[in-house]
Length: 269
Image (tube, rainbow, N blue to C red; front, side, top):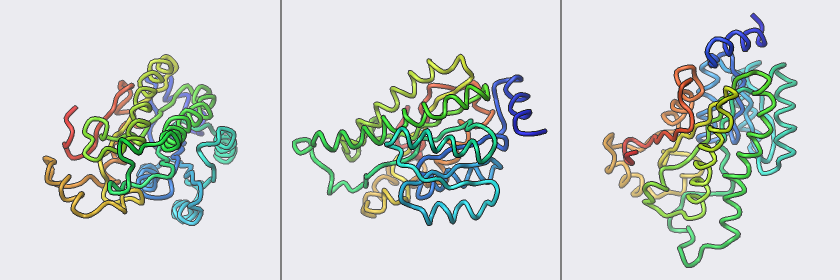
């Protein structure tokens, strides 16, 4: 059964597609959480496009570990035209449309509470930077992938959020505001695209141990957060990646517009 036939058979049955038959685009997929997500999909048998901006070596090394199954492609997610070219290149390379999009890329941000701007220091430039990277970029990626998902009659969009707008243990104002807006778009896009067999969900982590973005976080902050969770530990990138795979898998075919918090039970609901 070729890829096109597999897509037609699966989507006509119940609007679900096994992970091994999906072509997945992970933005910012070469390092940290993105690498964990890319790796989880690859181990599940999916074909994966590992998007990167400047992390050429990390992206190529990950792709080389899964020859014929992974493709590393450069694009700045803030550039809508670059995203369209990225999706077109992926489609041409694999001979099938992107069916699954993970909006993971985090642009120019570090989780360092000591260095964050306080309420009286927060600037329009900081807010604009985060809204560009965490709201406009995901919208651009979704719009680039939509024609292929419609062609396939199937789509899964998973946005990466945060638990900080429920529990701002460190008030990163710009980052948190942008991710809250992305949750709103997750729910409105779910309503808009649901009739076309495209599910849109969000996975929200807490502080992850450890990614490039959380490398600047002091050890005592990790310990404090761990002590407040029922699991008494900080969530790993691999654990959050597992939840992303759930939303892409047939197990979640009846789920859309949802926000799943993966933080060891720190935030309830």
